[in-house]
Amino acid sequence: MDPGAQLRRVRERLGLTFRDVERASYELASQRGQMEFVVRISRLADIENRGVVPSLHKLYSLCAIYHLDPRQVCRWYNIPLDDSFHDGAQVTAPRTHLAAPPMLLKLPLRFAPTFDPNRTALLSRLVERWGQLEATLFNGHPHYTYGYIGLSDRWMEPLIRPGGLVLVDTRLRQVHNSGWQNEYERPIYFVELRKEYRCSWCRKEEGRLILESHPLSPCTPQVWKSPEEAEIVGQVVGIAMRLVAR
Image 1 (tube, helix red, strand yellow):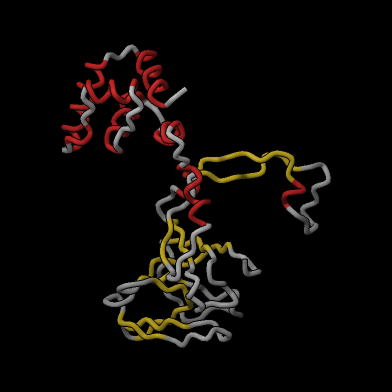
Image 2: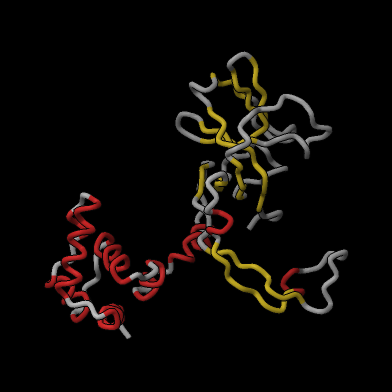
């Protein structure tokens, strides 16, 4: 069934006429202060019967009025929003930057009887059933964000390789100059500069933020005024990266 027909079926199931939808969209547009949200009768007829693809604003209005999940409606139009994080992971960038979290997480629902948590093994061989879980349960938390390590960013290599993905806790912004016993315990911070981002160790001295690279990295330390030139986004609390280049 084409998307327009599916939208028509939902509207009819709700008992809404074209005029009901138009009236509701006008109310929504008034609340939002944007006339782009208005879905006129003629446009709704074209969407349902002539295969016209609604604009983003009109699609939002229809989803709100019909109580539909926008991601589901986008799937009707072959736009897989749930896959945007996965597809984006295939596209690399030279600079380190913040990244939107995935909409869905794939989690193991049932492990195989041979699963032994004490032994190292391939997870794919230990899971009998996988399931999708709304990532917003975890990543919708306002204190967490993702950072992408640019392919030209070798500041923390080999501890964090270029192309890696880091989970950043924005609550942890205080820089600690001591208190760790080795490099694995030392806090790593995601830092926003004027025109770019850094992911590195940090040290603070008299209004200056000193960015320190890994000893094996070719990068040299940098000194920035803080917070005028450099600001801590948060502390890295998780890392996902490839150990072998593609």
